Image 1: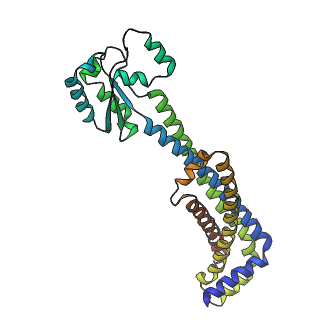
Image 2: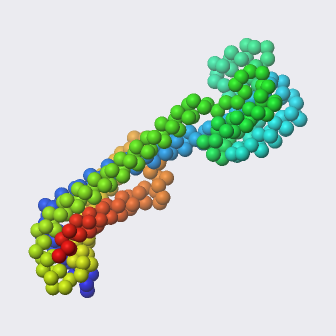
Length: 294
């Protein structure tokens, strides 16, 4: 019965303060929508960063002719496998390396009397951030160190480091913007709901004077904030759903990162609605503290 009373009070307050309720809901809608956009961009960049990280391959080359020495190849293979952070080692013969070249380079190489490409080992890592360390360790192996044509070990250092560094800072900036957006949302919602609470300050004072606890006074306003937040967040999720369908029809790859969220797109929508309700409840509770000091 008590909860029915609290819900009834919250609904009466919403009906009696339509303008402030709409203003708070629109605030939640805008904030939640922008937050979802930032989160989607962050997920997209994180997905692409993981792709770049997983593609990092340390390549160790040996002298041309070593491909005819099985004992040497086995020895180098075992030494590379023993290097920390090396997940797998794949031998690539000169003939296989030639097949990996584009057609123009294959044509140019075909005009030579012999294959100029050296034998190599390609290493995948358990931690791509350790590529430099693995590269240095591989370069200490005599057969690799004396490959005959520098560089004897490569992993696309400049491109990989630049992509990882830029993406890392972009994610940091997006995280900071999301945090600032959340703080701004709480302030805006608190100020909007403050109007509703201010219009009922006399009622709150009377309730306090007759012995009502802070909890009893606070619950209807918190429920009002949650309902306001739910309405705004639901509107934002509706707009995002329309945008999601449009982007999926345009290019499904743009929406792939959203599916990587726990429980997928539905989980992301539920999280946004929960976030909107939290913003509304927190903003209401924060604003009400001043009026409970009687």
